[in-house]
Length: 340
Image (cartoon, rainbow, N blue to C red; front, side, top):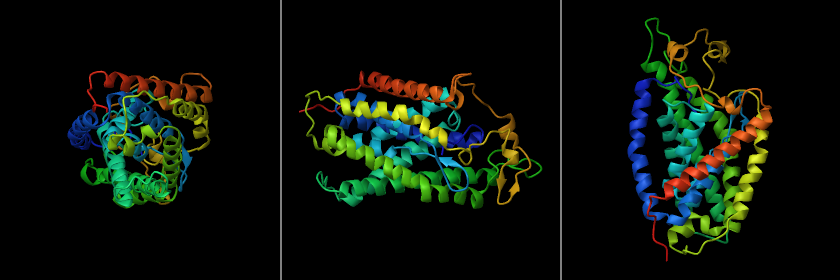
């Protein structure tokens, strides 16, 4: 679901980034008001779950790949506003260091995965729960699963629309697309069928599994508890949660088993030969061929001649460490909600 560089016109990128600016502003304000100061650094752990979830690629219908995002999961742990910030910063690190998603398309990727996904996912969760936390029942897990499934699929739909309007709005003199060459009749089924059938289920399982684990070992890290005001200033140990992060880091090479490229993330050197509806595109869009690109440190989570598995694990360690550090630094100037 990461929209790469030059698949969207600069005008589209500008509009999507402008749409996210007030969202980010609102999220920062609400996190400062709602989340206790001592819990703000732990949002970095939530961001780490998202970052790691996006490294576990799975094969999708049609020969492409996909992954979980964890937006609804973070919303369940720290609230949708914190989830917006967590996923946004995870996406920024992926784009800047690993070339996963574009810099120009960063606003669009955040709109889909850091705005639509967590806010919709959490709204569905609350709708099913009807305001009840149901701490001891299974209803909260069902609600979490349904919310995450709906959230990621709606995010995929918005991404499909953003892809699909490009050839309708931006063409060269010969009538060829300048950026993404696939219109809505192609982009929507190409994105939605794999997400409805596979990726949405992966997101559901990822969300329920980690949410259930955190509720059991560190219930003070769930938004229902935080939002209720039941959290005290007493420092709690979250060793099991950090241990889970370590296990996920070690397991990330499983994401290398899925072959192929996610739909809409092909390079300019290969898109002309991609087969869609039984025929190849036959040309490379000018915007893709001559557009702006950034030379990143670890492209596609690799590092020079380093072993692929070792580089993937190193990428996971770097990403998680930076996210935890960044949110620790973010917490310093923030006041947070006063604890009881």
